[in-house]
Length: 185
Image 1 (cartoon, rainbow, N blue to C red):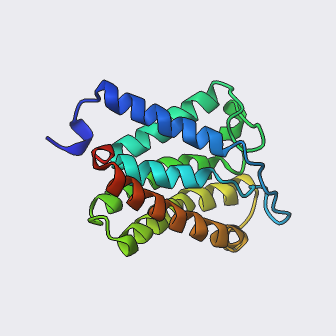
Image 2 (cartoon, rainbow, N blue to C red):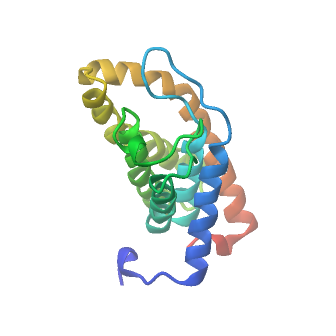
Image 3 (cartoon, one colour):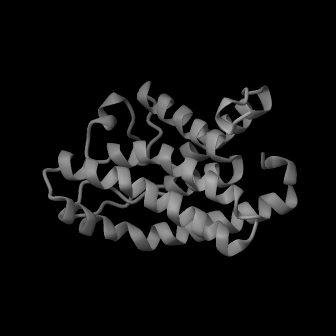
């Protein structure tokens, strides 16, 4: 049975809801506006990386989808108190949609990491940054009327913080896996 076709049980639903709530809680930290682009720096990508690394690819992506579904319903859970369908049409929408891919890719790579710290960092970097930027940068370029190069260069302002978040997610994931092995699928 493939990972994607495995049934979802109550424990899985609760874990996904808990990580969706974690992503929402990280949204309470105020966004840091970036003057050169219309997308703020937020702490919520840390929650996305943790969801993928701790819950695994499928369940991490489900947690992010659950979170984004609640945001779409109008709950102001994004950093800065944003919510509603409108956020899915602005310049940051690609990054929000990229969170699903980011959690999935992080989960795939973290599962193969054997809880080795350098591999967990790589999983968080590739999934939490690479996959998210792969969706977010092209969307921002179109929505903000920028060239791909301009959008990519402007997005480099996120890198230092995202690298720190990837390291923090790897540290937390390793601690969770060691302290509570049953948490990881």
